Image (cartoon, rainbow, N blue to C red; front, side):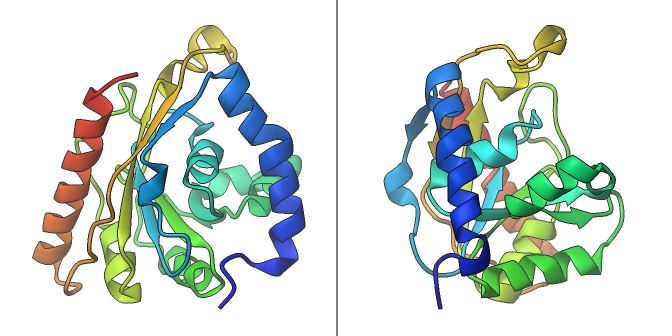
Length: 208
């Protein structure tokens, strides 16, 4: 299996290296810790905290391989934005519901060589901490038998302070992979997402 889907490969990397990476490393003075923990081949579920619209491309850039993220379906109603986020691997999900089509899309992405990316709390939090992790990431990891990669974003909650994208310092910390749940039973999934949340919050507490 190819690590990356060939049809989107060229455009994806043009966007990543032509825009996302320069903005992360120059404008946001980005620091990335733990990149050596990222498996470069095989199925992978990437989970992160979430505080900004900038988070999906930052996570994908930091882990060094394409990550297909769930995105709220409302974003796909904006024509120009829809094409951009689709190029970057996004697929729609209905918030607040059990969206089986989104789960199928995540599984398809894994089969096509993308990593599947999910924000563990499901939506943005003002302080970037995870207090109520959702089960979706653990369910997908269990179904795909894919390891989970915990990622912490520090500083992104301040990017849009006062209404504009400001050059705040951003730090990305990548933890060691976590084994997928042994089953799709609810208690097993809950134990796994709580472990992921703990690891991400602990990395976030390290700060810059």
